[in-house]
Length: 330
Ligand code: GYE
Image 1 (cartoon, rainbow, N blue to C red):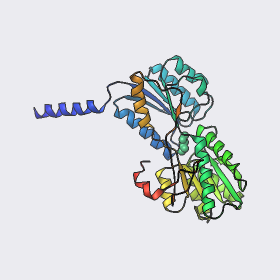
Image 2: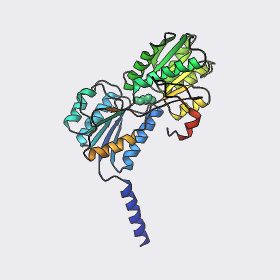
Image 3: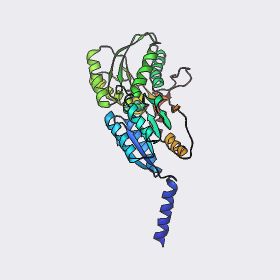
Image 4: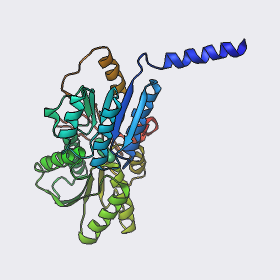
């Protein structure tokens, strides 16, 4: 009898924790290049499984053709929803039209394909990458000003993300646009580090070998900045002091580097989309529609002391990394 009661209790718990709908969700993810990506995959996959929904997960290993294949196999399997993050922006027109023809609701996540205006989608969530790029430069300009270096000639090197990825295209655009406002800042060299630590380190090594006086590194994600820190140390320089280092994503490891004085700032880009995604799918199941807006989460900027403006209106101020590191989940 006791066993029976325990079983009934356990079943009730499972049922109340899982959702009322039995859904199968196909998720075409791009790969595992960074801490951001790991956090994103875990957050989305765990949330789907916690709902009791069936997850069909596919890791594209940074290859567009793998992702095209995954999308086609989701169509063949007749999944109920497709979540899609494309490794690059272009080249998705055909396969996404096939998804539309199969009438499987498509949810765009993180990186938005360039054919977005020509396809149907049920909802879209992603970072405002152009704004993130601008924030990196605005933070830099305001920091230099505060340090009394506002008029100084500043040499910048840049580590770019995967060439042609939405986050690379957008952040580059934002950075270049904002640099126009600062004639004292020169972008002396820019190369891709593919959003990985290993390549960030390698490319920074080549920058250090060929350029004498690097003042600033703008790194389009934190992982590449963390790799670059190793290269800078190996060259006998002090990261965060001899070279100002600004990253993007705001992963915990970047907070640790900031607290250690080896990195100066990280502009936030959240990977935590589950809290948007699950209610959206539940809403779609209930017949809601979400229009064509691309939803950008609210994001901040973190550094050693706090108090540096980074938005266009100058009102939002950077947050001290040490004050919030304990709450960081990624
Ligand atoms: O910044 C980087 C990741 O698309 C926003 O991809 C994402 C980017 C993120 O690998 O770390």
